[in-house]
Image (cartoon, rainbow over all chains, first blue to last red; front, side, top):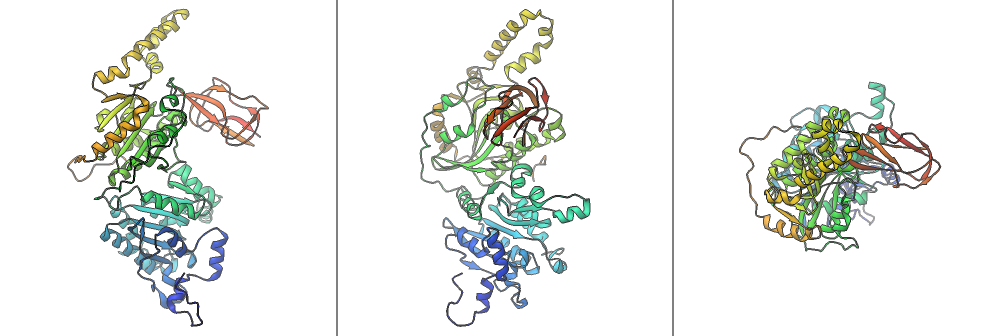
Length: 512
Length: 70
């Protein structure tokens, strides 16, 4: 707060506004590990806010400096970004008429400048006393969400959640590309615990119902769980580095770095037995530039890994099955997670890398009731529509609709390559032999069954042998696991001129 | 006390710890078989296995109890 006068002259109106709400609210924030809104912006932006509009909003009211929200323009890594940031020291960051107008205007500015917009949210929601002016009308709060949807896929929209985002306000994070939540302080909910008790009779605490950890691991409404505000801000700065300023541009290519070095090679990492798990993170770190992984939704549906990385300096989005968790099987939540991530990468021209080791989609009553077919369709829809370079690697296996969802050959990847021990099939050998020969096996005398099964499995193995698939031109290449990085480097560079119009129409009918 | 639960529906293939055994967070305590895959189930915290609830060969649903750790 460099503008505060240190001499004995009385503080100007501007000085007062820049200090936000009353000291007791600053103290309360500090106790919770919260920074003042202007400190947050100092940390987020290269040189702080370089322009601010609406500083004097509601200045005649006296107790509502800037009407509880700071809006302006600054730089991140030298690139122009717009920001809006609630001030929770002023009426708990609640929204009045001018708060909403300022938020709408900065969205309009981001649209005109075609630059990223960051929402630093810490707000109790609408100021009920002002509802007629800020809630229902053409430039009421609804307009904020309308604008978010309009900006979606045009410029990156990032939400940093430092405190509550309540009721209608909870839709700000919902419409952003990514939501970073600070553990212990951030929350999202439509009705507070007090309201839940009054209206539906449920007794629940805030953390359980709408806390950061819950949203980042159970509901999937949060993408990144940060321990502190500083960590959340650092993540946002890092994340933006993988993105262009808008949909018409490309991400900046950074200086290439080789992957980190390890004792075990990729080949040594992958168990020969298809059924035995291994840790996909270890494969990822062996093919990407050292320290370049920026994960999204780490704690949610972790049987599928999604995140940004660099390969030879080029920004890529990785979608990888994780055999270490739930066998790498695709579930309704993992399909939903993938659908959003793929759509995000495609919107901003970030190439997609699929690393498949997938036994298929989960089956059973529980997942059918959860709508796994509907969610699986979302993933396949988003993946089909994506026109960025798509590189598919069959790491070990791709069975059933798992092959389809992980950008198999029919979905027009620019290449579908397999590591030398990989298998592609409707199902694995054990399941297939059982499915085809169940009756035959049952008829055989007990002592002959094992031999028969072994023989049929062997025949089946040969049928789905990777060279057989390569011979039939189903896959484009078979490579040794340790060559993977080099192959990806080359192919990625070659595909960057890809231009594809997927389909001429108004828009598809999304199976959401 | 913490209960180790199934992360997905499947058959209990192996319980790899015994009652009274000390375990640490992240250590595999059971392996399920589901979708023809081995699904390791890890303890979420340090402790001693006090009770094994699921039997090898049982079908269990997601969130069903496998064992207790004190």
